[in-house]
Amino acid sequence: MDTFAVKVFGSEYSIRADSDGDHVSRVAKIVDQKMREIDRQVSQSSTGRTAVLACMSLVDEHLAQARGNVDWLKRRVGLLIQKLDREL
Image (cartoon, rainbow, N blue to C red):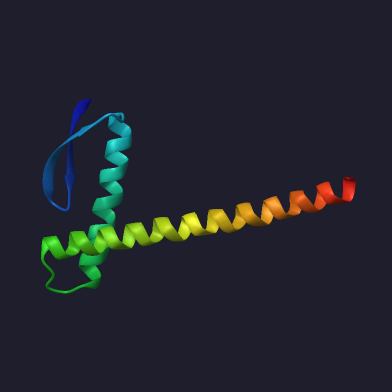
């Protein structure tokens, strides 16, 4: 496990991770961008509130994408079943 220094929303953090440095930096950049986006939208917000809202937004985006992937997979499996039915 390696330790990496990242900067998120103006603060520096030491992060221990099994991932490589590029991955950790990419994750930190995404979190930083989301926190800055939330900070612009919510006036006079605390860093803690901004962090929670950013996390909720990122998880919401992740779940929406996961739902989309499941829907696509269901459609694809359905089409494959139809093809199999026609061949059998």
